[in-house]
Length: 446
Image (cartoon, rainbow, N blue to C red; front, side, top):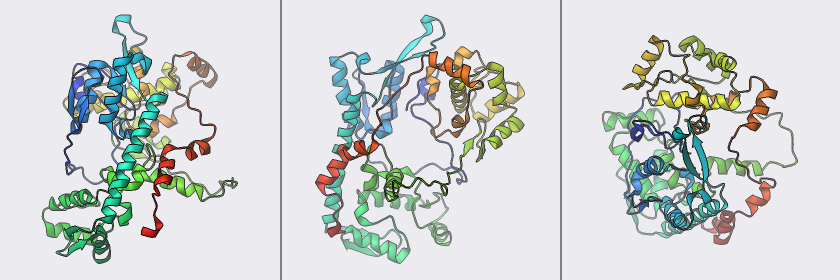
């Protein structure tokens, strides 16, 4: 979800959504090549006349954050952001924003004149949850309708991505040709939607000499062709979420990717009475250093790395300052955000690059220097700077009994849901009912 912060140059540095760590073993970074599909839809401000095109989403989110102090949670999970904003704009005209939004007070321990209220709009509110489900249902209907049109289309005409073969009749002829003749498969035709846009995206990457799997750029077509053939890179990068919109499975469950849906389907095949977990193995944790891109599968290794390589001892800070669990979370998120924005977290000095900032921290001895606790012990730092930050999962209280009691007395926002019967909730899902009614999987047409 979006994190809120107001600084002198916040227009440039505001973090509107959690950041992502670089993937372990990823190749050299390159500018992503994306086929743009402009939309005529506008995103409207919930409080004023400001509006921007859909492709400039971040501009409006920044406007809402800085001008109106509103944060919308889990924006990526909203099926139609334009319709969502129009709905809430109307509701805010009828009732005050505080009737719908949770209030987050920043600088809560500081002077009253420096305190600010931010508003969080999220699906904990039943009305918001229902709206998101209806938008998801509407989008699913549109996607299923588009998929059926493409399945029935007999006027498809397109050249192969890898040779001069001309395929006509139905999209299946081209997809099957590429799989059979070039060992390149993007999935079964009936699993694909917006097929022409998908092929346009792949063609654009190839025309710009980009490998479809490792996404490196090459100097000419011959080199690219040899690379994809020798390295067996004739497939797409499954970790590139740019492709998610072209697979029907990504539209089936609210807020879930195809990997999550698939894992749930796999679990349902297992006998629910079988409680033997003896052969279960967890995926290794990959924690990232606060100061560099070093990753480690064990927390002891990453703590040792930060201490030996950067002189930063998180355990020592926890003991010296007697930090409870929540204060540790806020401290880690604060340091991550400051480093991402090239600020020295010790003296708040701004630098032009991360490298200059790191040189300053080391040369000035600011690695273990923290600002006043009121600077970082703020509610906005409950929100992680990076998604899936494994470092946060390893934090613990220095004194469990005393700190737990203190945490209970602290004004911490807690969001609860009734999940007593997940099976009933899943069976009653409006999306599942929709899929049953429309006969999503037509085996006779497969």
